[in-house]
Amino acid sequence: MAIETKLCAARDIQIADQSPQTSVSEGHVRLRLAVASLCGTDLHYYSQFSNAGFVLQNPVTLGHEACAYVADPNGSEFEVGQLVALNPIMNCQTCAACLRGEENLCTAKKFPGSATTVPHLDGFFREVIDHPARCCRPVAKHVDPRHLTFAEPMACALHALNKGGVSKGQKVLVTGCGPMGLLAIAGAAARGAQVTAIDLRAGAVDVARKAGADEGLVIGEFEEAALDRQFDVVVEASGAIPAFNTALMAVRQKGRVSILSNIQLREAKVNLNQIMLKEIEVFGSFQFNSEFEEAVQLIEAGRINFDVLTAQAFPLAQTGDALQLMASGDAFGKIIVLGTDV
Image (cartoon, rainbow, N blue to C red):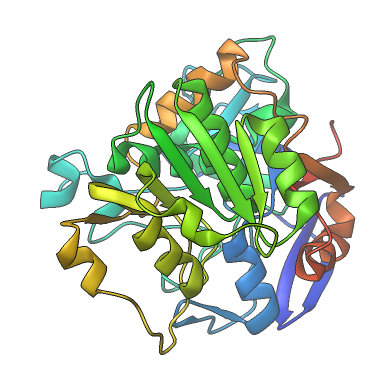
């Protein structure tokens, strides 16, 4: 019997037997979970039953970062047992944003494990998943599913790097060495940028160095004024307003700040005068577009060591424990959840 997880209230993950529909909907394929990974968005829903102002209206299966094995191709060209990366953005393909190639801004998109889609769609922390065939990307046979689960968050990190215009030889600062910050560091380093990483936690900074940071700094152990106007691009990946103000200070004149973090709704004092005085360009970065393909290609090429970015692995039935560990802040890197076939 397959199992599924349900977030029924804040910090209440329940496990139940899963009863998939007998038939697979047209245009979809039936999959079995290989590996999923936890996101900060999942953590917000787990902790508060809401995220960035969007409140869950009913119990839901979380998870939007995953890869899976094809169980039923349902008339598609996929093969049984084939490993695929799952793009969670189910865009309408017809609105103005979609026609511009900006599926992240689709006005009618559906997204699993999120309160932004009503009625909510169950996410990927379950054993059996029916997903649109067009949103499944088959991969080379050598790809490790523990690495492929990074495709979605890596795509988000790459989108932030693209918004910031990160390229070879640039000096890049990443504020925050949580899972997304680490992926931004790895992505920037893979492009040949000179990367500096800062975080409050020494353990996170240690992982940042392993991820590709040329320099890792622990906040409180250096003079922040030394960062003043030193960087071409700053990627804000912590979600903390003081870190955003550090970004505005650290970026050079006419530099760029790209916001990768999921900043929650709250009052904050932001040094907006720096944007004016230095003619800083500030970019929001939301999900991804063509970067999903870019991320999968990076994974297939083996250009990033995802093992050093993985904090711990849990079986699917222990998803609640995995979220508790993430909430504790004691894990440095991504926490992944394993399907029964891995």
